[in-house]
Length: 176
Image (cartoon, rainbow, N blue to C red; front, side, top):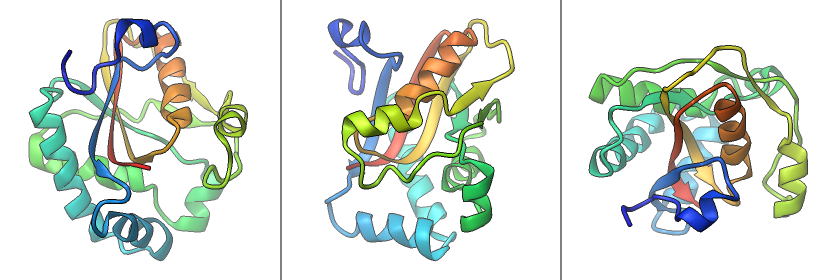
């Protein structure tokens, strides 16, 4: 089975066709780098983390997909000043020329997922996204910084598949 591909049995339980990960959250300084980007506003780190994603995308032959950054709610963008997934997506575009579409929006403000259990995360994120564009036959690559339980990527994938996306994969810097 190709790296990152979801097995057929598991795919019946998820809308994601696969997820590829650049590294693990606990390896080296990756946790600190991601926290510096997200919580201290060191946006220059998106350059390094984006390069890690590019390598992961190319190795896994996903460069023909359309990039979609996982959206933040407007309140969170105001708090943080940016969406880290959009910063990472820009880095990927600069290095690969891949296309992006900002077709997914966050319509529900949610609690921070960091301290929630898997069940709480699934409940918290349910109904949080919206896609108002028909995506018939389009292959989507969701971009985010970290995947812990996969609840956010799963909810995004569910929304995109309902809009007609053919395949939805995720690419993340780290798995927590």
